[in-house]
Length: 203
Image (cartoon, rainbow, N blue to C red; front, side, top):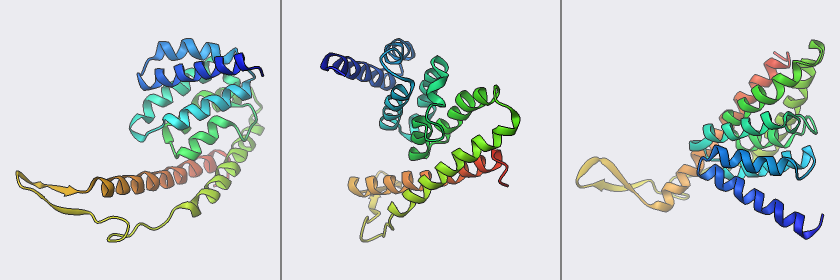
C-alpha cells in the first residue's frame, strides 16, 4: 500500500472519529462510504473496531452502538468476516459493552443466520462463546485488588455549604472510576457469556 493511500485512509479515520465525537451521523455515513471502498471487508472491520474501541465510554455506549449499526447495515460482511474472530465482536468483548454486543447480534448475526440452515445456528453462537470465554479468561487475571488507604483514600472532608457533598482528591476519584469501569466490564462479559451460552444451546 503506497503512502498516498495510507494518508487517505488516515484522513478518513480522523473524520470518522470526529463524526463520532460530534454525534454527526451524516458525516460518519459519508466517510464510512469512503472507508468501505478503500479496502477488504476484513480491513474495514478491523479499522472500525479500533475506532469504536478507542472512542468507547460507558456514557456514550448507546450512541456508539448507533454508529456500529450504520456500519454493519452499509456492509453486513464486516460483521461476519473472519468468524468467529470478528474484529467488531472482539471490540465489544474487550470493552465489556452490552450495547455494542447487542448491536452486533441484532444487526450482524441475526440477519446472517436468517440465510443459514437452523441446524448451524447453535454452532455459530458456540464458536462466538468459545472466543468470548477465552478472551475473558485471558483478561480476568489483569484485574488487581484496589485497597483503601493504599490505592486511594476516599473522602477527606465535607463541603461546608452542603453536608451531603464529600470532598475527594481528583486522583482518588479517577482511581475509583477506573475500578468501577473495570468492574462493569466483568459483569457485562458475564452477561454476554450467559446470553451466548443460551443461544448456543449450552444451558
